[in-house]
Amino acid sequence: MGKKTVSLVLSSGGARGMAHIGAIEALEENGYEIVSIAGCSAGALIGGIYATGQLPKFKEWICNLDRIDVFSLMDFTLSSKGFIKGDKVFGELKKLINDCEIEKLMIPFRCTAVEIPSGKERIFESGSIFEAIRASLSIPTVLTPAKIGNQEFIDGGIINPIPFNLLDKDHLGDIVVAVDLNGPKNAILNVKNKDKRASSLKLPSWLKDYQNKFTNYFYSDEKAEKEDKLKAMSSVELLNFSFDLLQDKLSALVIEKHEVDILIEISREQAGTLEFHRAEELIRVGREKMIHAIKVFEDGN
Image 1 (cartoon, rainbow, N blue to C red):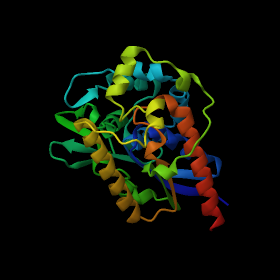
Image 2 (cartoon, rainbow, N blue to C red):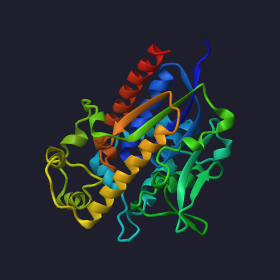
Image 3 (cartoon, rainbow, N blue to C red):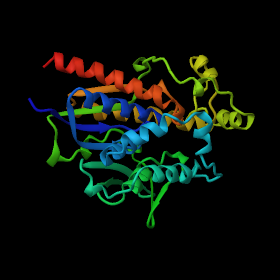
């Protein structure tokens, strides 16, 4: 029998997107062939790089970043549109991954972003894959909007966090598989982190200052221990909490309206938005969740 083909949908979710890598690896290892990809934000990043055939190179790089390395890639700015410019990290990615035109990829790939100030959805299915990923990944209040020509774009997750509608109808697989990075608290999967550099690293005081200011994006051990305690929210925290809540509800509605053969949920509380130093751990989470989901799917068919 030939391989079962997959149309893959990868959601938004910041650093939790590293779980997409493990999910993809599990699919391949179990004899599934990915024939089309639709991604948003972190899903656009991982899906796009996978479609170029360069995901192993990216995985090796991201898994060797510790917390200090991640901070060093963040070019902080005082812009009111976001506190990270993104030039440094995308500069490093361009050294690592060759840019190419989306329409020339071996695997059909599409991703989404939101044009501002019109609020219209922009679907990227041609042109530079780096421009498309940068636009889709522009998390509001975190990464400054992406500029393409005279237009500016922000994270596609604002209006389409799990972009089923982007799947290429001319290249549909035997089954649809989706990875949702904004799952509920009870979807957390505890895995043992083999690399202790990130978890045991002591941050310099200036880095702790940034961490304290942006606790919505960087989960510290202290925060995890106190997560169930009530506290007064600042206006920024309240804004981000409201955005996360709306995105969670939108994701649930989108999933309800589409037929999905295999769906895995990564808890929103599995990792903070910018905790890329936990990549190895998150990859294992994605892999284990997908392996389990495949078994359930195959046992039922």
